[in-house]
Image (cartoon, rainbow, N blue to C red; front, top):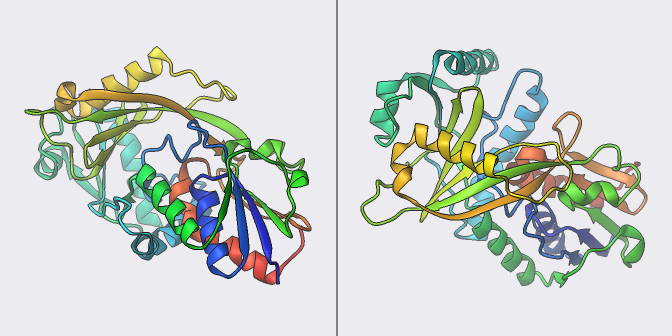
Length: 337
């Protein structure tokens, strides 16, 4: 049996993998420099395979749905990670954007997925804070959400409980001593193995975090995903406010938070939920998703002794349970690159 495993990357995928592998009786070391532009730290926390789905990505929808089914038990093992079960509302502000949601609804119905068409009035009955410009949308009760930063903390504690050793620096497969190295460095994975270089790329995204203030309307209870003049914006409730995101750029590792990005996020979010104008802006940040050509993750052997668990793009948090399971299965069964 493989006894010593090194995980390169301390985001949600790397920590989930390290936890599960260490719990199986193996000695695990995680190399992570605590980068604050990693996708796991700069994330909304949506666990939403249905509202993330689109024609042509049926395999991703199936994978995400199977992982979502594991999330309640996964979260229960970790403790309080801020798991929210109220579901998602996908909303639109004009007829063109409503047509996009109707297309999504038809696609989901064809796959036997639950997504109920609702009017603007029905949406405001569910979430009174929604603005008068919201014309209609979809209710997706099965989607979940999680507090990504609370999740990261809980995963580190779970790893520590199984004697996972942490090295606060980056490393490469050739510079560590282990039976197996798992590359789970997100957007930085492409630099760690030649097979990943043409496959994994950084996809920049910006978010803002808002905190409620005395006298302001409370945040919604559900995640709100909106289309505003063709732009996508999401509002994910937290105990102390909201996360609003996320822009998407193909700009390499550009860490700058742009004025235009923040302007669009706040303007679109306010059009959907006018009450946030009274909230406090507490953070703006940019991070990097690990993009892949088909938006599916890369999980498997790259060569003897080197495994990949990367390329999760927008779905790293969602796919953490099933990814960790798959890595553990590969370690048990072996296999070929």
